[in-house]
Length: 93
Image (cartoon, rainbow, N blue to C red):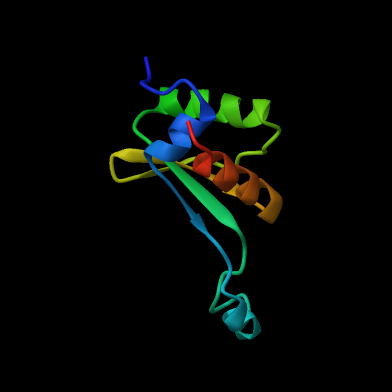
């Protein structure tokens, strides 16, 4: 069983946001990736399943999870979704 029960707990444990750099917008897609992205890192596939369910319950569409080293990364794309989750992460407990 995971030590996390809520979406906010997953976000606070190990997540980070990637925001576009407005000064680099003219470089084009080939050299600069412009999108909003939040990456949530978890330890097991069970955590990925639980996290995806929590994201869907929050009406956030998760991207395709992938393995990185011995962990799993669950990305979320889109400006509105990323801003919503960053605000949830920042809320006081």
